Length: 232
Image (cartoon, rainbow, N blue to C red; front, top):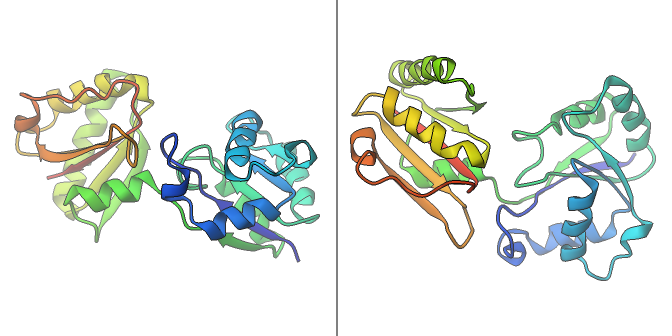
């Protein structure tokens, strides 16, 4: 029976050797077919991992937010042909990306699923935050509109207070400053906020302090991949 490998990618450019283990590189090198979010960026990643591979001989199928039900039916038969690599755009597959649907298909067809070791910005941010790592919740993206975002932040604060739970969320990098401003505007002064930006990269910044402390010294995280963590 074929195997579905869950392949991690680096979080920041030029960090391949720093964050991707040799055994993962070996597995990638031996695979002939992949399911990816974007074929062009996947080709670039694989070329960096194994420059000797003939990329044109590899088979790629896309799985992203535009995939439809019929696409998943085709992917089911695709998985049964050969070992397949599920490649995330950034970090770990199936975490804040659509890969979980493919894993569900694999389990339904009795295909072995093998997660490979690699970087996760969400877990690395939690590790370095000093916040509760025993109970935490990743809630993905918050609403874009200010009124709805305000309500979401209040809910996260209350949940953290009631359950003693770290609340983790992300944003599209070009909207980081807007989100940060709303956090400072609507969260309580004593609430703790950890900002983890460009993890593993040259501009890496991981700092935890209260909302009141952040107001006097905002970091420049515009267009930089960032994870936000709240704890009351």
